[in-house]
Structure formats: structure tokens, C-alpha cells
Amino acid sequence: MRLGVHSVTTQTAARHRRPTRWVASIAAITLALAACQAGDPGASGTAGSSGGGGGGGDGDYPDAEITFIVPFSAGGPTDTVTRLIAEPMAEELGVQIVVQNVTGAGGTVAADQVANTEADGYTVLMHHIGMSTAPTLYPDLSYDPLEDFEMIGLVTEVPMTFVGSPEFEPETMEELVAYVEDNIDSVTYANAGIGAASQLCGLLFETATGLDITEVPYEGTQPALDDLLGNQVDFMCDQTTNTSEPIEAGRVKAYAVTTPDRVESLPDVPTTEEAGFPDLQVSVWHGLYVPAGTPQDVVDALNAALVVALADENVIARLAELGTAPVAEDRATPEAHREHLQSQLDLWRPIIEEAGVTAG
Ligand code: ASP
Image 1 (cartoon, rainbow, N blue to C red):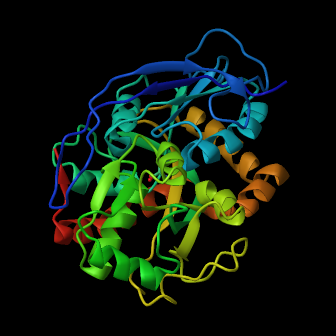
Image 2: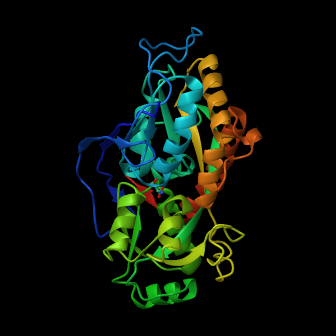
Image 3: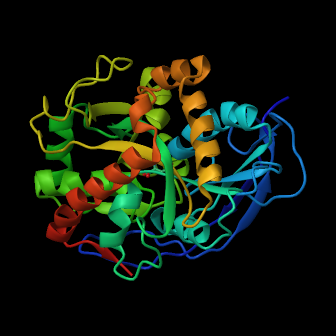
């Protein structure tokens, strides 16, 4: 049986107040329902079997379909990682997993939704590094990442890449920085909204170069990449889980990877450090969350399925193709996840405060 996936996308306006210039704002609420093959955006199929009922904490968990909420667009990097692990997790848990894309406000709409759902293990959030940056970026954030969720475990840590549109003039990271400086009023940078990894990477670019870039927010980096490929925006920074294939196919200009070492699957792409920007480094870690108060046996069941998924040969092979790998087993635990989130909250707060970026 194959994994059951429906994609429900809710786009919500985010009003941003920040020192950089924004050339687009999104003020639409849409609801879209799509279905196609597992592994593709909006995929549909089944894995395991679907039962009725619900509950949790009674030893029967799971006995109904589970929904995985993705805070960004279908087809993007967060969505890709989610769908990849959802299939073996569904098999392990013996129920269908539905993947739902709830977009808006850099991932905070989805996190808020999950924080406020029933703590029964039937709604699970996949989120990334944005879980640790949002509390600083959004002074009025409605949830507390540490207090309002139980952690299931870390999933993967993904390098980012600076890429340019096919017609964008710069060919190297050094040329990119010089070109942005010379054309500061016209160059555009795509991101997935305040709270997205791409926004954080843009902020690090600004800090490293002293340049104040014009950012164009999207509901995820898949639509951003589409516009980049169509030369509608100039450059972006996104996970290798989204950019590996266009880089390998020569459809985008690849400038640099944001990790200390080159990415094995992209050996020709230099690091930001090689390009002269040693502080421009970030890896996008992902983790699974359920609402605070979820019974321990439910957390344990989800964690056990996650551990199985991360050891799955197909998951490992596909992540390797996309420039990354599952986390080591000792990081795929609620304790390691909580510790990492706390340390990332501590790491990013002063950096964001120093940059003076807020959303509201
Ligand atoms: N990679 C995106 C980000 O900038 C989100 C996504 O579309 O998955 O956080």
C-alpha cells in the first residue's frame, strides 16, 4: 500500500516591519486541495492501513490516520523531507499519514495551529530551524516552542546554497556580492517569509556583506525557485534538498554552500568560507513536534517510527542525493531535540536582535 497524502495549503498574510525593503507582500488566504503520487508535491496514496477512532494514551495509538503539518509550500525542501520520512513512518505505525501544507508568516501559522490542536498524536508538526528564530523575529508570537510542544526527535540537518537565476550576471559568490552592491536598488532576493531558513540565510548575507537587500517573500521556496528559474527574482539561499537537482542540471547558477565543508554530492560548489565569508554559515535542522501534553506512549510510538524511518535505505539514499543525511540515532530523541532547540534559541536570539529584524 502507498502513502496517503493530501495537500491543504493555507496562505496567510504576514505584515513585516524590517529595515530592508520588500517589493512584494502577500495578503491572501487560499485553501487548495490537491492529490497526486507519493513523493511528489501534493501526493496521494496509502501506506499501512487506516483505522477509525482516535485517542492516544490508551495503548491503542495509532488507530486512525495521522496528519503531518508542513509549514511551507508543497514541493519545497521541508515538504520533501516530510514526505520522505512519512512513508516508512506510516508503514511502521500501520496507519496512513496525510501531509498537509499550512503556509504563511514564515512557518508560524502552522506551528500556531499545531500548538492549539488536541494533544492526541494525530497532528504532528514538521518544522525546521525557524522554530528557534521565530520567538525573536515575532515579538507577539502566540506559542512558546519549548513550552507548547513535545519533541519527537531531530530528523536531518541540511546545508543551504546560494543560487542565482539563469540570466543573473554574477557567476561566483565574489561576483554576486560585488554585483549586489553595484545594483542594490534593482537586485531581488527570494525567501519564504520572516521565520524561514531562507530569510535567516539572507539576514546572514546582509550581516556578512553589510548590504541591505530587497527581499521577495513567498509561501515556500518551491514557488520562489520557480520564479528564480523564470528570471523573475535574482537570487536566493535554499536547502540542498531543493536546489541540488537544478544545480546539477545547470538550470541555476550555484555560488556557494553554507557549510564548513563542501557538500559531497555538489563537489564543484565552493563553501561560503572559501569565498571569503566564514561567518556566513547555517545548516537547516528539522524536527517533529506534537502539542504539549501528548501522552508519553504516543510520543514513544512516534519516536520509534521516526528512528525506523531514519534507518530506511531509501530515505538514506535519497537524502544523500539531496546533499544530506539523517541525524545520528542519538539525536533522533525527544531529549536531544529539546536540548538542540534550546541551544538554537540561545544562538540566534542575539544575532537577530543585532540585525534589528522584526515582524509584526
Ligand atoms: N526552505 C524554505 C525556507 O526557507 C521553506 C520551504 O519551502 O520548505 O525555510
